[in-house]
Image (tube, rainbow, N blue to C red; front, side, top):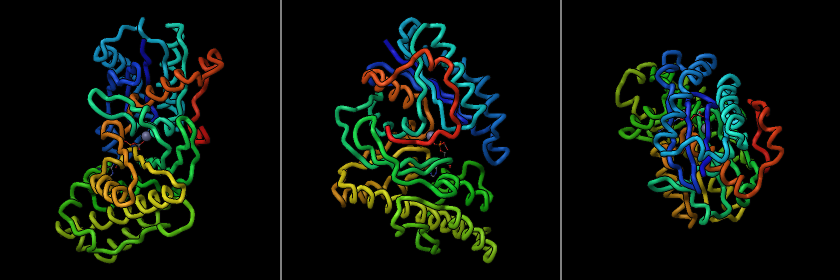
Length: 346
Ligand code: KG4
Ligand code: ZN
């Protein structure tokens, strides 16, 4: 018996098959190339591309998992938050499959799924919930920056979020100022490896603020003014690398500083991180160093589970099924998308 999961909240069309905590397949078709031309995700194009991709992606996921449709015991999809048109494609497709198989449908909160993706480790990937412990979880992507206290399995409390730009958005906007292609995060990461993080001093917004919230738009603006005042630096290859390293250090200082502080304050002994920005090599290294220093266990989502994927949606759906945490199944067949769904207590 298996769970078939769909994820289409932004620009990745993904379908996964999960069985007893194991990710049997997790097929992702990225639209990055399509949107790069426009310097960001174009919602209408994303929805149309999901429509084109979803059936072949679902076929590949079933084939890779060696699962027949008759083995599917439940179907899950991201219900929100995300781009409305994109969400609609995945949610309605999943509901149609569930209805035709006469199996339950589960609408999953995208960020709640991110919270548990760091527990998916190994080859083949498997959710190690037997090792679960209360934690502080950092979700950092192009659209969101969230700090969450995961009190127990399937129970959480949001501590803080970004007041303006997300961390990934800051990477992408700074990259745009430097003329880097979208999404710029991976390229800044690469250039920063040969740069000096102390070369330029950029602000660390809200690092010492008493709240667990974040703000990155001021940092992006200070880079814009800096480049306006020193236009020659943007042309110099080493200065560009130093600039990337310095901006990255400012973002990472804030993310790591606030995450560790929250963990200490709440008395948890475990920190987790997920979302596209968690692919950043500096963030991974700094979280490793800081957690080791503070005696905290650290779980970083594997890169393929950092970025958006249906594997994490299916893992959470199966956990809910196991715990009997779903109800009014018939109502869920016509459940609508929730593009602005806030992550509330689990
Ligand atoms: O989670 P994700 O794939 O999509 C959503 O935004 O939901 O995250 C994409 C974001 C982009 O902003 C991208 O620039 C950033 O993650 N990103 C990185 C790296 N890889 C991806 N940022 C910094 N360093 C990276 N290595
Ligand atoms: Zn995401």
